[in-house]
Length: 336
Ligand SMILES: [Zn+2]
Image (cartoon, rainbow, N blue to C red):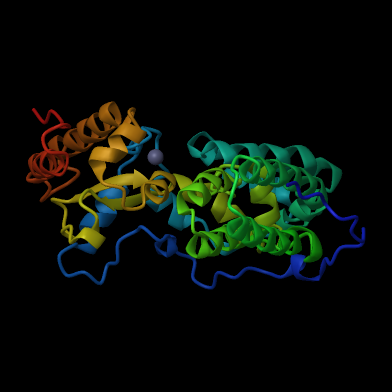
């Protein structure tokens, strides 16, 4: 079974594309995995000091993170006005950006001379329908691949056909520039799984559907999502995956402690990807973490030695202990 795009009206609805920023609070603490500072155990100043180390590598991917002090020094007005000027202000952070954001930065930079007065939002909207077309092609390819990979019984096949009608509506009946289509397609398949007799076969479909592009790993998806966001949100998003966030080695959801014996710094991108996957499994998914967590700790130890992190003398040994405990001795770090 295949789904093919309908011929849709070529006049798209631009109205919501020029809405301004959703964010009212210029803060990095909106990211889902940063810890809450309402906790009595984690001292806010200590957390700031740790995240504010210059050139601190992410304990997971090993890439330099953006210094927190630099990030908060960027004001709302820094993201307003002609995109070429905004991009110039963001230029010092280019080396810290993650791959998708680097590519978006370069696309905007290339496009801006054609529209010298356009701000970030306008510039993204100039590109929108090119990227929608590319995104749709990728989505279709993945969905068709997923559903052609299994043979279902008659009841489940009927349910799948119903699911595909919904997916079809999401992709081709609703306005082309409506974001969040990925999540809603996924939801339809989760419902299908819930209803199905042969859940293992639907799981096989889901495994492929979960590969639908998202704004973190795909430029087209990024452009479609951010076309309706304000200048500040677009600008912040170019930087936000590279921001330092505190990650619980033993997840908080599994009653991991909310103190520094259980907290290391990961970039926001890695932190989001990890979610609450146990570290023993996460090290297998990200084998490079074995050397990067050492690189991270070496940097922290140097900062402690240079007296930039008072009250953190306990930190390396306690992280070593937590890591060994959480991974049943499989992974460790050197701290001397
Ligand atoms: Zn990282």
